[in-house]
Image 1 (cartoon, one colour):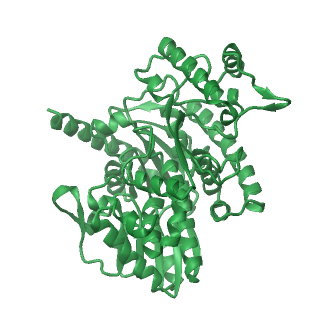
Image 2 (tube, rainbow, N blue to C red):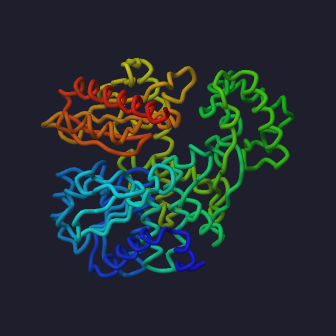
Image 3 (cartoon, rainbow, N blue to C red):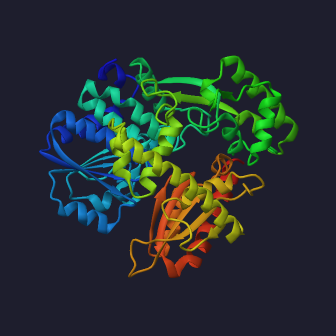
Length: 494
């Protein structure tokens, strides 16, 4: 496959944007890559950095929790010929104006920088110094159809055919942003990225069990920690998970080594899945729970079996572990091929990340969830790190017995500005809530701005930073905005 063949699957206007961005990148003498700290951001930065390595362009990578005035000033002070924003920047286009920049992102564009056009597209208004590549500007979902790493991959493909081999990193970014969850498979332009990776022999997509840990977790642990779908009587019960598998006649060990899911034969996998499906039909109270048992899984075929890099979902979690705990550079090195020191450090961070999430979930439950009219929230103060509180909110919303009829909002004290206390708010919704009209990106932005803060993201997951003394006002406004969205959605449906 070459870039010309690849581009045939893209909207011409989006490919034009990618080529304009590519021209800016190849013409720059030195570049600063500014990116987010999550898996999508790290994967996007790795794509951009590898492109620049191959061009021989001097560059550095800067990781940011959010793109605020302080971050923009620090980037400007570097006086690079070009700043390449990956997985962020679209929401701040009006603030970036004047800086020579490339933005390859998938978040909702800054309303101050765009005007609506027919077909739901957005037209940039006079931002000549910025090359902007974003599916949202062409009526394509940035929540489900292309990630920040995916947009960055488009620029990479426009730079050179040789960069098509970076497609697996775009897959990791999409899976890391849960873009496969709605349809239980990647959709939209992500399919083009997937087919590129498959055609080059770098990835394989198969229908398989949807639980985390296909490569690295013992099978019974994979079932014990399952949450989507929740397995009544098995989830959070190691003994029950082992008993279920033994009842299927499954050998759980080879010698003294626990077997992982991907060491099973196709017949063994099919038998376990059939048993779990029967179990869910008998015991789950959630309609359609059994339908979420399987989905498309993505194997990175050139990675070693039994490692977290072999499975896209596990790879993304490894990157999140690095970024969310202040070591995004370690994740970048892993993405760029370091399977020695960086990988060993990443495994330690992954272990610590899992422990932090488990402790965070317990703290959230202890703090208790407060239900308002249209949203629900928990506030653990400084008990949960602001970098993982959104993940905890999603875990709590999807846990057994949770109230899924309202978005979950998590509040955590930010440590970035000790002189002016700020609170990080992270919100998560379900696909059902989105279908009813909920758009957390718009809601969080509107509520935060009324309180003197900033916010944005996607319809199903978004964040905001607000002054700590305005939390109550923020929640009140957010509750009202979400209520208005649901009411408008009901009216549209007739």
